[in-house]
Image 1 (cartoon, rainbow, N blue to C red):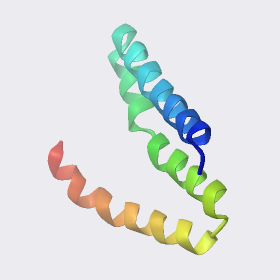
Image 2 (image 1 turned 90 degrees about the horizontal axis):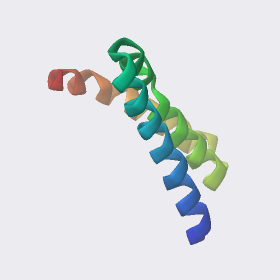
Image 3 (image 1 turned 90 degrees about the vertical axis):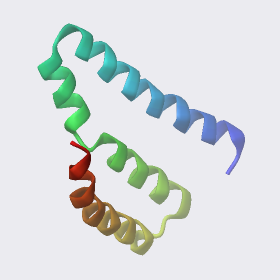
Image 4 (image 1 turned 180 degrees about the vertical axis):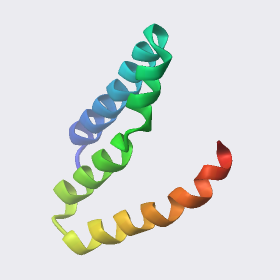
Length: 76
C-alpha cells in the first residue's frame, strides 16, 4: 500500500467524523443519527476488500465486529 492511498483513506474517514461533529453542533439528534450509523465499519470493510480482494477475510472481520459490539455497549 502506498502513502497516497493511506492518506486518502485517512482524509475521507476524518471528513466523515468532522461532518458528523458539525451536524451535531446544529442538531444533537441528527448528529447522533449520523454517528450511530456503522459508517466506520462499512468504510473499514470497503478498504479491506479493496486492498485484499479476500471475501473470507472481510467476512471474518464483519463477524468480529458483530461480537465486539455487545461488550462496547458497556461504554454507554
